[in-house]
Image (cartoon, rainbow, N blue to C red; front, side, top):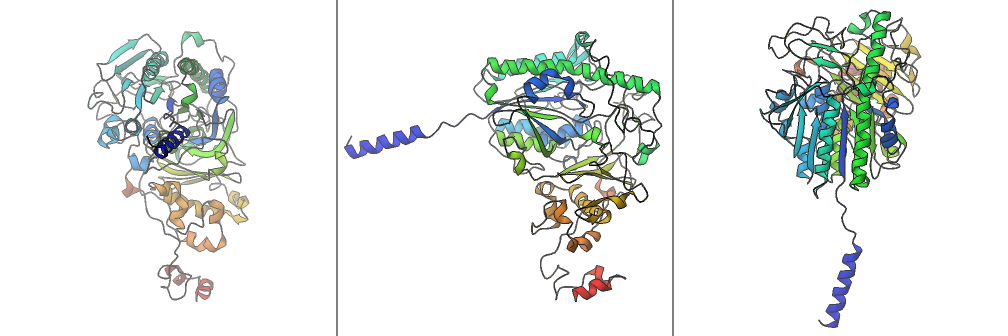
Length: 598
């Protein structure tokens, strides 16, 4: 080889050696519990979780589900789309459940499929969807997984009578065995299998703990969750924290909540034991976390694995005088645990970023190197210093249908839920359809909701963390609330507009809702929106309202759907001379504004 060519070849070789090898995509282990609470100290009663995940990862202290019910929350989690965009809003037909998921096309288009397209092997053990049964598990098979072992109805919530289908095979019953241990063993098997291949992997374990124990057939009955004998002596002295909202003497809330009677001593004693049973059921999950981490260590893959730990929704027991259950917009039901451990995640860190389940799919796909282009969420801050870059302050919360209490005092009935003529128990609370938002920053922490009865709630969680003082139902109470030197009516008008955007948002409008109102981009948060020059604009906005209380997402009953944008051109900007006369200036009493305009 001539000298000049030889020198070029050597230079090219050196350059090639200087280019670092592309690291393999990270592995993802996802642990998803069922109905785990934040407010009743469930995380504090899981020492192995504290050791291996909380101490070695980041706890997200402002993480929320967007629908406080299993199936729609899981669809939100695995698609990155708001429930009003998935149209899965319940756990059974006609508005939810596995058949509805299939009809909506989700079985062929959600996170595990996307990860497979990105080069991942995917595995799942435990509960996937509600109404995923021994009769419909193959109509069609649940898609997206290289390996699966799904819990199937009607035995999903029977702790010692699980029925599962492995890789689409005939259902197998595990009568007498403790369900969270059974699904954990399946998950260990999939974890070993995943690490026997060269491809990156996604492994999910979704045990039923700490969900209540429920018999779906022949009757719809339930009790507190079961726990294994090895945990029977734990937490005997535990009682539910007696916070301000625990069985209060003076009840807050609206609609059916405000009419709830105070719980008696017998019910409270049952509820304390109910939560003890939930904590005991979580001990199997706690032990599983340690085993999973040790398996990763043995295979040398812990340092290239992100571990997510969360739940589908929160839970209340005795708060606001309620029997065990979820389905409300209160913090107990929507504020939930999220912990992430991984290569870039700060250890022992508490993140105050405002996040929701809508953000999970975007985060995982970004880790996989294939960011989602059409998501209703953002990526979680996973690296040191990323919290400061997170500007999101809002969470969309929505619900359609009934509120059904659980436990011996809740679940009962004399009809088969699979019967088309099934009627919910008479004690189920009607009119539990609502739209809500949480808006959180260092300066404010607000919950605002509008119910299908057109009642509204406004709680200032900075001064009222138990959500006991609805500022819209207490005479003169709202007069004391100010923000950025603005009065309550001005703040509420902004929240009305924000909720209008979020109740039907899609894609970027869910992430940047203020831009729908202010296309110029000069408003990006609640404080920005409070400038006095916007007062009339917000007063003229349509507001969230309902014409009926429906059990599912039927937009025709949910009032106006479009907001007005703050105009920026001569044809639409009412403050520019030469443009059309804005209608609001023609209304009686607006003479001063007319003078300003002219």
